[in-house]
Image (cartoon, rainbow, N blue to C red; front, side, top):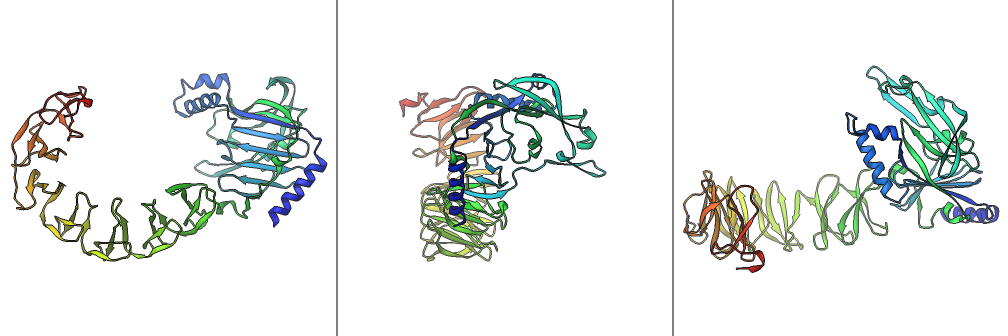
Length: 487
């Protein structure tokens, strides 16, 4: 109601009072003086080089860093990443009312039309606080320059360096070049611009500032100074969140800046879940794991409904299967989304399932379990590194072995490294400092002559015969091929 009435009154006022008033549109871009640019190559720290890179990048981009629309009655200023970071401020000069618009969250807040910039510097012995309002602005006579095709005069705000920042090696002087035929423009932390008899077209110090690139006179557009109807009033800007994390399904997690709790909103900024969670994971399918403020786990659907209440010690979804890993008293089990237990919570850890099996840990040893919860291999192995339907690769006393799942017996001697090769009966093996390929029962198929070798993908493996050379490609017979030739 308040927003609608405000928009109506402002629209009526704009249309009746200012319909004939022209607007001046001023585009500002980051600017470095020639002297400052010359210092970037010799500066000991990277700050000057960074500024130069920013200025170069901005000069290639047609988007101004600051845009202002101004006449005798109104001011609108949009910033793009240098100052208020993609915000819009609209000000009614006559009433003194000013509002900050936040497009990323479709909200607005009441604000001062401008404030004096304050600098706080810790000297090590004391805290030095200075305010631009403490230093008078001096208008410099008989000094002029042309900016954006318009004649400008100079105003300066001077102060001794130790009054502002003792680390500075020279006295500070803020230069303001202004055109007195344009209405003054001020916003944010630039209240001192109110005292300038015209619009500032350059503001800077030490050769670094913003400068008008274009100034155009345009027809008055009342909508520039209206608050959009879909924006909501926020009493406290710190209650807003500007950081959205994609969750999938065009949903985004956002954090309330006051409570620090997490909620969900959609791509239209409509809140789906009010901020009440400590964390929200990305959706896997139509479900996402969440935690409450007491670090208890639950699962929600894309409508924000808790299908599993936040009362679990730990929950994790398998990205491939409709199952959930859960923990009770430090032990892990598996259940479905109806909370039907598939594997009781009795193991120290269970890995994600692959090829029908998952490795599990119990009392410092590793075994294999299947999707029915049946133990395929008991936990008797030091470490299971890899497996398929019939064999596993284990580490024992720093040596790698292939073990037959059915017999639970080793089928190879020990190697420095083994990895299933994704092809037939082959295994990548490291013997000494050379790679080759063996069968699962330990027969050498491709000699140990490579500095590096990969498993096979679509019948082709990448190998290096000498360190640093380009990769070569072989088939399962060890013959050199081009990737497109296949087996």
